[in-house]
Length: 327
Image (tube, rainbow, N blue to C red; front, side, top):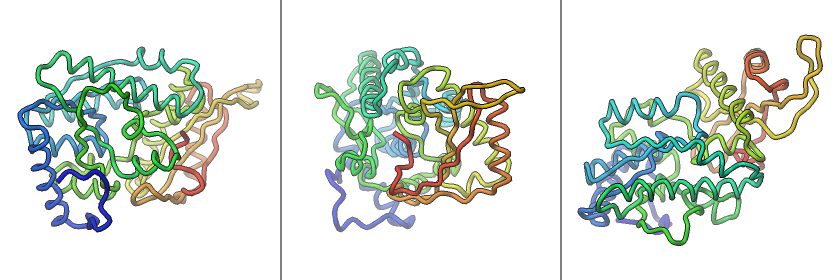
């Protein structure tokens, strides 16, 4: 059954049995919706799009083409990881598109977070349309939209690339099999589909990528500071053995500078904000409690290894009042 809304009596997916039931329903719904046509899927490698890919592979097999777009806003090493896991290990029909310059050129001098999200969302659709023209019989675009995306867009909190950024002249019909699920339910479905734990429990990563962690107009040097500081954060969380204990953690580099000192000389550089939260369904979140010595070690590494960073801040704001992401 294809749902337009999340039914009031929908039984929350908390068990393998309920996940299997949902999978069976969606496989039949996808077959009925798609028929013998081809489908393009925006495969980021995150939980949501990976679960959608697994559902579509079960339902329509090689009618699916997965498109991984490198928009220049991905985490360090992420494009290579997606190619390895999905292209080589899982054998998906994967198309890789490096559109870094295309996206960053369009985002130059754009400061507003909603404007950035809309540009990124619309450009994604344009890239998919170009890939679709190279294939025959593609009439559907699959997306990993989930229920919090829709709720936050409808309530005006922020536009989502999945829920609010599609142009009016979109020629594709959408396939969104997990759009009524919360994040914890998507993970249950992923486990039932047999996806590896490393994929199912991967941290949430927004469609606009590091673009929402680089507030204000995105510049390549500040974007690189976000990417490098994020890589240090992920490395140290793993070394300390707490990467599976914290639901989501990342860095943000805002568009302002402050005075600092390095090697006895004045610096005027960006701060780096550490954000670490625990949540179940992404609708609420609490700041994770980090060991102070660990935070000091993170500060030392980031300020000494990431060009342009002279200050580290620790965000302990819950959701609400702050959203998990900054934009």
